[in-house]
Amino acid sequence: MKTDGKFGMTTTTIEVKSSTKPIRIIPVGDIHYGAENHATEAFDSFCRYAKDSGAYFILMGDYLELFSATERRTLAKAYADSDLRDNARLAIEEGLKTQLGKLAKKLAFMKGRVLGVLGGNHSYTFEDGLSTDELLAQRLEAPYLGVLGCIHLAIDYHHVRSAVWIWAHHGKGGTGKTVGHQFNCVDDMAQFLRGDIYLMGDNHGRGVVPCKDELVPYCDSKGGMNVKQHVRYLGRTGSFLKGYEPGKRSYIVDSLLRPNSLGFIEFELRIVDKRKRGGDFSIQISGRS
Image (cartoon, rainbow, N blue to C red; front, side, top):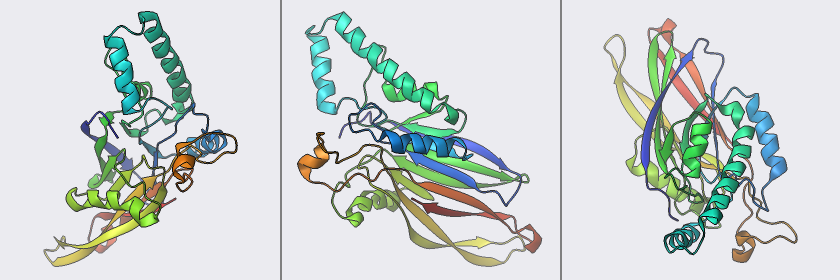
């Protein structure tokens, strides 16, 4: 797999007025919009759900059914050697922009609520140096992070702040047939990146696993010492590309891999108000697929 190799960081402040309403985070990626095996019905159902969810979104890469790294190298060589006329390149780029525009229109409800856009391994870089992933980020008025993003959520509750840290990578490995194997690479992130939620796409697996419970020492408002339990979450963010459809070709069929897990995962961040007990507040995270 070859991506742009970029690492980005971004921060978003979310003001919470009531502890009864959770903050919802939906990572979604590997849409492969325009593919022959695109799961149109499932994707349209997701859009209807997400539009009314009030959630924030993280886009995980591979938005269109585009070129692999090998195909991108072949195109770049053809451009450099003038094996493709300028008109041919223009036609390719105009077609891609049209397709991307259709996807951006379907995702327009996300504007102002996208925490970050990742770059995937199926992309295209236009003559002006802008990639399809970066262009989608522009269309949705969201920060582009590259293949790896660190997202800082500053939760403001009655003028007191706490933080949730999310690490998101388009994907690395994890194409094995067992569920455990699919999460091993996500777990590897948690070994050296400190955070609360760790996300990967790319392999089209889907699920949320709580893990890495640890005890964190702290001093309370009265100077006393205590410990609290910190739980971190691993997520594989699903797909909207079907693996098996009668009469249609797929690399999934060629390799006899497990079917892609269509859909998305979701997290809820709930405020636990401790002010009446002399504390501030904490954030309780839960996830589901």
